[in-house]
Length: 242
Image (cartoon, rainbow, N blue to C red; front, side, top):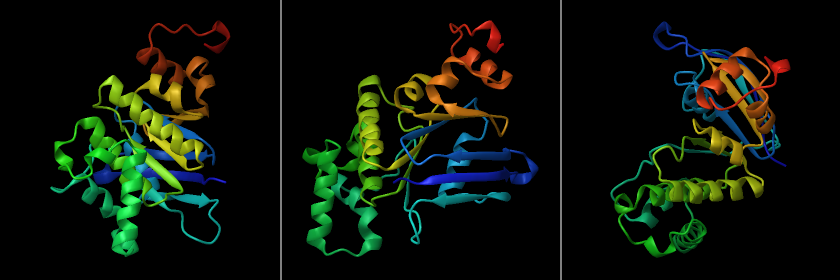
């Protein structure tokens, strides 16, 4: 069924500096929603507020779609936080709160690592993995919690094209399986490849929200057109849209 996320007038002003200035948006339950915008627009901060890692100064984040139980959220950062231990041990950290029998936990970890193509690296030191492998490990760890909502903050920003393609393939699989994905990305080609819909932030506000394909090819607001023109200067919008 998926999770719907409703953002109501989210404001965040650390030390008196406005980062988010009244964000309102409804994130639908299906597919991948991307959050894009210029540096300093508040993308990563908004993602952390959705996850509960940060608390907004005002406004609310509401979740619908999981019935009476709390929504299960998992967060993957741009740089995975890995301890000095094996790949399998790093993945198993996600299962500690569940207090599973050792054999059951080991089985789940083995399956998760196989799913992301790391079955053969289970015993290797996690910090010796390549950047792409570390990010796939972070995805495996997140997915072990069986999240309703997967939050990704620039997950391929420092990866080469091959590693990026593999991570994107896994993310698309997760979304196709019914998990709602919210992705922060500065890579508009990635947004076009993956996202069903797009929220464009500028100066801490929603400049435009809608179908990713429609927004990227025919933005309706001056703020969105200015940002996209700066990022993709070869685009030419119809005169009627200007």
